[in-house]
Length: 519
Image (tube, rainbow, N blue to C red):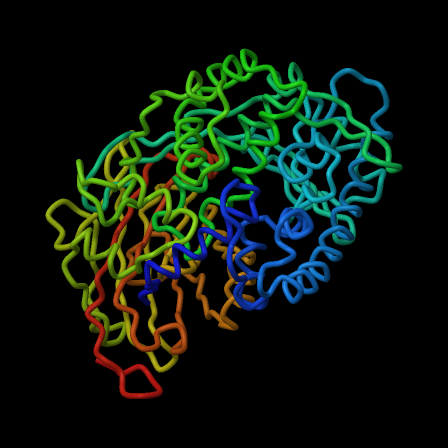
């Protein structure tokens, strides 16, 4: 499923997105069709900012009237959802009273709360909250009509609470990720180095009024900037391959600029928080992105980065580059915003041997990640290799991937990535589930129905396993590349013990028009 975009189109798209994000420079000569541009602006969290820019300097651009009308309709819905979320947040803030150990709302609505600008409103799927008194918080929310639907006391996402269309996630910490500067086929070294605990939020928060709704408690501008940097890095590190548009949303870069320009922003305090939270690699990536895309780098940021000269060769993501290639870092920074290449290009760089897809459950061979295997495998360090086995079958309804992981009672997750979207399954001991959000997103984007089997596969000989079937319309004209990521963890999904990243070049018979052939 190659996604190729010509360089002229990429350049024009980048120009429009950067302008919408508030970057100085020339105004675009023309906006593309609104129905094409709107999804990009939404993915980059730029709906409100685009309307603001249209009023300031874009009204004379060809296509501006159509774009403004479409964007205004979209932004009306954004405001409605954000106001419902704000109402929920202020209700909790009032109910909490004046106790000094306060729940702190972070990410999502922070930029609006700190700037007061409607253009900074952007809805999140949930409200992220961290609190030093989780017992009281878990008692308070049910009294306000919320249902606790999940609780994992050792995870960074401790619990989730639902009421109508409001979802609140209670965090133990905000994760900070790190990936070592390794380079090679299939290598993606990644692990959580730690997190930003409540003690940091407790020392660096502020209560701000939000119109007539009341007040909310959010991070200070310095901590908000650090959190946004760490989330940018997490999205970069956890995506083995850049998404077509917006692995790094430009709206998040614009928020960093907003936080750094806040009148209460203290440069020295920002550096202290970044160092305390071990966020230097995250700030380093933010510095590179801000500079590359024309935002400018706030003066305090280089001092908080591990190296003012970025070294962005730390994941398999930098698929087309070799050490020392001129312009490699710049191209990667562009790909994180608008991707120019395709999944096949990425797999060609990793150079795995083909894995034949075909046959049936009795004849299809199993492949393993054992040393000496005939395809490229990347594993993290820590506790050694991960025993993963998989096979690919062609069925009447598409391509089926059976995956097994020897997990010795630990939790495991499996992500099957076909380039522009991924399928995720996980198992807790004997309880196999699939991530419904991933499937809802896939259905929304492509109208695809995904068949999954979560029953153990007998041929895996006691190994925890699950199966995913990709229907024919996913394969057209023919999928030739997959990336399989298996993660083994202890107690929670945040405490990774071992992982394997397995790029797969598929030996798939070419299908006649209208279908997938059988081997």
